[in-house]
Image (cartoon, rainbow, N blue to C red; front, side, top):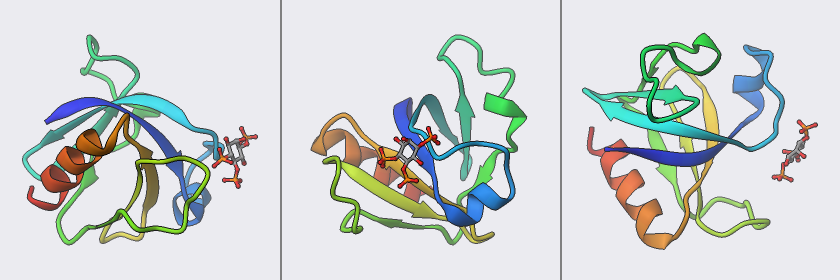
Length: 104
Ligand code: I3P
């Protein structure tokens, strides 16, 4: 599965990166239990900011998180402690992403 999602970094992830907490629209690609982030759909040779692929084994998605400013936001916590917020375009899109992330 792949497509655009708005992503915001959460505290733990922020410590390890130079990114701000702003929402960034990224092209996200799920493949073999890993998630890659790219600036656009056409160039998936280089990841956004050179970020390593995210290992999704033992990750956890939460759709009933406390984030209330936008609808269709889910959180993703990975085994290594990274935490992200993702903003999907609608409820269906959110469901598809969560199903694919937790099932991969
Ligand atoms: C962030 C930006 C985000 C905002 C975040 C800010 O500022 O305004 O949109 O998240 O708030 O820190 P910057 O661009 O300077 O990094 P929300 O849209 O969720 O409010 P936060 O720090 O409370 O996550």
